[in-house]
Image 1 (tube, each protein chain N blue to C red):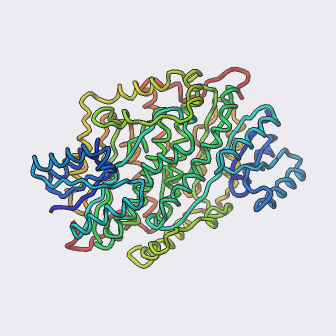
Image 2 (image 1 turned 90 degrees about the vertical axis):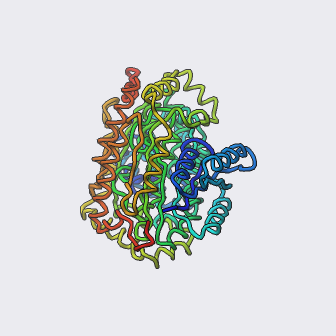
Image 3 (image 1 turned 60 degrees about the vertical axis):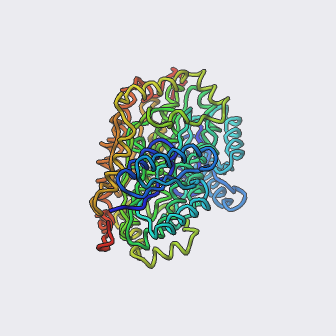
Length: 303
Length: 303
């Protein structure tokens, strides 16, 4: 069945790939991004061309995840055009690279904003509709770092993604009785196929960063990057994340996996999450809230 | 050996208990808090009385973790009074309770500020001295929720604590070669002995909260609170966290545990962290950075 889907951060990387893959699968997909008439105008044109060439329903929409007003406007536009919204994919994110101590508190706040508050703004815009429908799916593009390997010099990013993953887990419980399902996609490091590393931000406190560069940690940044790259297999393909998202969306309601790992580096997240998701399920059952582990079905409308 | 110690959020709860326990163990302890001449003036008097009655070196100091200026001033004062700083204990934190969707993005930002950016401000104030000394200990008071059970209606808090735990893990790697050791204390839920639950903040979006109160999740807040309380054993004692901190501080350099769990509820964090800390160690070894798992010793100065 054709679904109405919005995906954030869809100008490039996992987001752009997933938007195309979902449109190919027959869905109406809103590839959302900011600056659609500015910096991202070429990405809008690309998406339009893709839609025309492949005869699929891929649309773009202005949505700046850092603005509550923009999130509300975009989601309202989608709902008014389609009379419903079936799937929200939280994909927008940004990375920084450097010694933790050299980032200002303001930089950590900004990174939490783009990776986590972004999802809160989109949720607060979209969930009233999904709750009203008593049906929907929320897909979170988390990170293997939230459970698995965490090399140095990515602390502010890892902190934000760990926060996002925690938020996803608790939201899933609170939305279950409303008939809203949750799937968390857990990508490992892909050093190619996305601009994640290339576009990574740097510490604002250059003097502090220089102390690390000339002290006992001299060279650690390069070691971490090279080490990271060395464990990404040459055939690692970022489109595997898009494929995983399509599979989740197309699975029947109530049968979607809570997590899907797509981690060619095998950094251990799959091992850890298998344990943590089980002990968390155990805790809910222990306190009499085991029903929150599955979305409630409201009958035919559920899909 | 007597150590110079600063602990944040020491006006009440774990922080106040740990400050007293560390002073009892013979250390010079700065119990830091905000509003020492305002709201927390009684707490300052309490600490003074405790120090006099027990003939221990417990001091209080003005430190507002939300202010970079305040963090810098407090830490500089400690260093100028003692010529060094040995141990930083990140304990300050705040909790909120309610449906995730009913919290504004600004509330999530505030909660990340008090639980996570607070540690960044204190680290940026203190770590230059610890790095110069090539010696020191950073103790983080994390939360079992970052790995174990996460009941509903605590999403913004769990997200922040998961971020704090991730930050602690990466900082430990980046500080190891500087001779700085890290221990993460992982308390479970203590519904007594701290004001954590009593002082919890509430969602700013009351209309949204009301939708949850009257919809399929009606009663979920009470169910979660009662369920949580039901798994805290009656003999759960918040002072066990203080005892754990003293034990970590008094352990020899290089031999301190990376994590100590103090979780009477046994919510699963101990199980999950045992796995995650191992797979994270494995990843570092795989990329040739296994040395980051232990603090480098710079000889006699290390303690």
